[in-house]
Image (cartoon, rainbow, N blue to C red; front, side, top):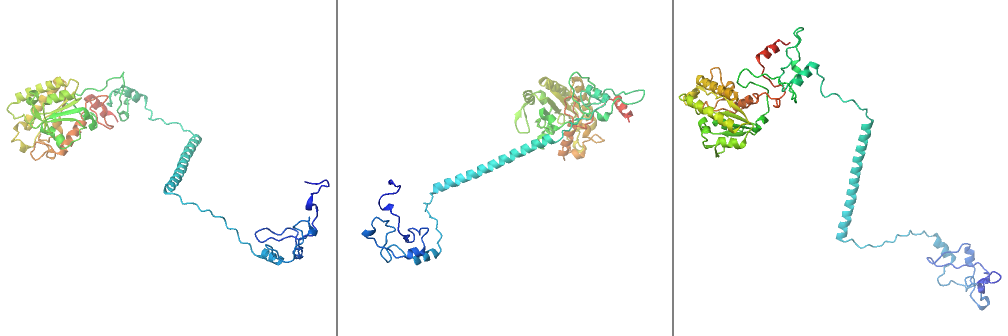
Length: 432
């Protein structure tokens, strides 16, 4: 405790008599500031009772070096030696186990993947933002009309059309001679009610060329016939997935009598029963090659007439197309004399009249298969002179695709040809 005079009791109240300082050994301390080598060179005074109470650190010591102390010259030499840099303390870590190593590697991979996903998302967001900004900055252009405006006469005519036939308003101006419409601008147009039916019926009962459709037209159709019809399956002819009912040696009387017949796949069936169950929307019929022998035409035509009635009865909603019997090569007439050109023309004329009486479509298929003499063209004939080649079937399908009845819902291809009656043909021939 401090005494009354502000000092401390005991030997600490005594001020040291000299400035002698001890010099510790290297590593145990340093020389105090203010101590000079001369001070360290003074002789040390040993402790005695006379100097009791003095500071032991300043008490005189016996001369000679004391244990743990060095001479001034040794201290000066110690300060002159370069100091070695302190080495960092290394702590040995135990090696990681295999499980912890894998876990650390997995965490590192997950961090890398997270950074990659974040980068990708950020890039996409930036792209969308930039695109939106560019879209807002770009000037907005007015939308162009989808179709060119038509003149008033053409637009009025198109509104009246049920299908792509350019019929209405064809008289034009009789004074100036100007036609009522530019026929080149009138194309396929499917109209909604109310509309005016402007398509004129053809003069001939034979279905004329009227547009062209894709083979998808036959997707809901059926083909009924003999070995010529079997060829659609044998040669894998594209008829839009139509139902092929071809039977070798088939005749009209077998159809009427519901004879069990073998189809191209070897399955036995009754053709009328198959048609009644399938209910196709269209039926294409070709029979007669195996039944015409030139001796019993009346019986053949009677059965043919009854066959048409049976087909109409079981398919009340179907469009029935009756195809003419095809000609053969001259060398084949020895085996099928009933197919001679003159005789065959008479038979086909009788079938055509049946179709006119019953309201069925008649297709003059023989017109695209015979030459000037009425015989089958050699390019379409097999070696037997009766059956057709693949090119013959292509010609057959092409004919059917271009002889589709006029209807506002028929999928005609652009640029198709349409039939016209004589009055319109004359009118069109006068147009420039």
